[in-house]
Amino acid sequence: MDIAFQGEFGAYSEEAVQAAFPDATPRPLPTFETVFDALTSTLTSGGVDRAVVPIENTVFGSVRVNYDRLRAHPVSIIGEVNRRIHHHLLAPPGASIEGLLTVRSHPQALGQCRAWLRANLGGTATESVTDTAGAARQVAEEHDRTVAAIASRRAADRYGLEVLAGGIEDDAANYTRFLVLAPRDADAERVGDGPLKTSIVFALRDNVPGALFKSLAVFALRDLDLLKIESRPFVGQPGRYRFYLDVRGDASQGPLRRALQHLREISTEVRSLGTYPAAPPRREA
Image (tube, rainbow, N blue to C red; front, top):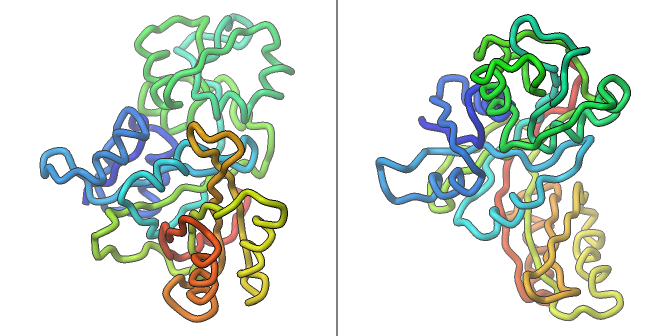
């Protein structure tokens, strides 16, 4: 199978692809939008079988735009992957930390290392690019010893860069959760063997006091375990939000099925984004 991910070879998303599909062919694409487009493409030459995208990081928070894309594209979540993210400061051979003027990486990576950068490279400028591996490739191609990248050790090996400092992330529990996606109409096998969880998106019927409480109560009344809630604003409608929930259980069975039926009675929009196995508990690595 061809599995799409955003970035270039050496990206953390490529590691997540290999964790979910060890024997598949990773397909790097430049943006998240092109990843979703490739997954839902009807063109054989441009399409892919599955995709893996990041959705949240324990240090720097959610990748919010991907919540919007989950709703806007005909895709289903079929699995998830938790990856411990180790960031490294990479530079061309012969470079030194003392000689650096610029550090380049994805905004999430820069954010996950901001305390280390402030403590060790306080006067160094930072530059944001579209992905960590792309930053490493650029640094290798330019061969400017005053410019470094924050990326994975895999990227260092791939692009021939030296590791000036390893493990520079600010928190030892720096994990990113990735979602495994399939076309919505595909008969896709779930990835993983953990307990089932379901992701949904819904919108309130009326923005009145207690409306959100009543929506969440449909789960509490049935002793369903809510794992996450995320809000995203309606475009052009200030004060209105969609809510994304992760909840334990199978959307097609038992208490969760009844909870979703109840939620539809009091909401203008309810959609299941997928029922899939939860990733194993996080472990230090």
